Image (cartoon, rainbow, N blue to C red):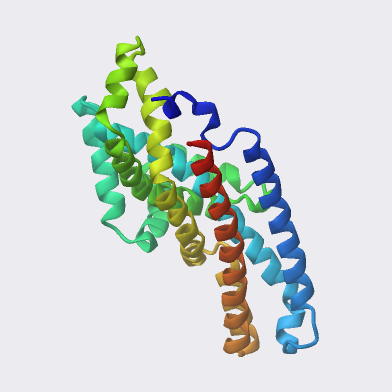
Length: 274
């Protein structure tokens, strides 16, 4: 149980700060390069005139991915642990939420979050109305609705990944922790969960990369992310090939950089667990 007794080293300690700083710097550099590339005279005039819109859309796409990814990770862990609970009043609702979300299309979930949920849940409607008063950092009602739908969607898939990771930890780890005097919650948070997250990390990372591409569906509720910008340029210039090609290239750049740094994170976690 020696590896499990170092929860603080789950992500390599101070190396996580360096990894985070490197990821932020890489994305800032990427957006600068995208801006320069789109202003090159190689592109049709319709693309050059709308270069800043493409960059803005890519930035919104990244915001959607990061915010939804963090929330989806937190909620996914809670749902995954909830499904494993021996208490039926906890396990059944968590299982029901995962069943509903995994069994319905993300497209429907986005429409439901934006048009139906505010009426069914008035506090959520108030949250969307409040979000419209904060235009900074792309915050608005449609952005919040998209974050809710995307985070719940990825949380349902993360829940199954986390549940599988917990079940993959040898039972002897928990028994050894309990014999040392740790309580049930302490055993889970300090011994079992860190090991489960290590086991689950590749699948969790894959869900995050998939989330970046799935965020394109937020265009259906008028979030001005990359896909919506590309469609607006297509409809206004009647040049679908350049507009869609640029969008595809930017998505490819974003996923490539994200995959690069998540691969680095996986390696750090493996090294920290040794």
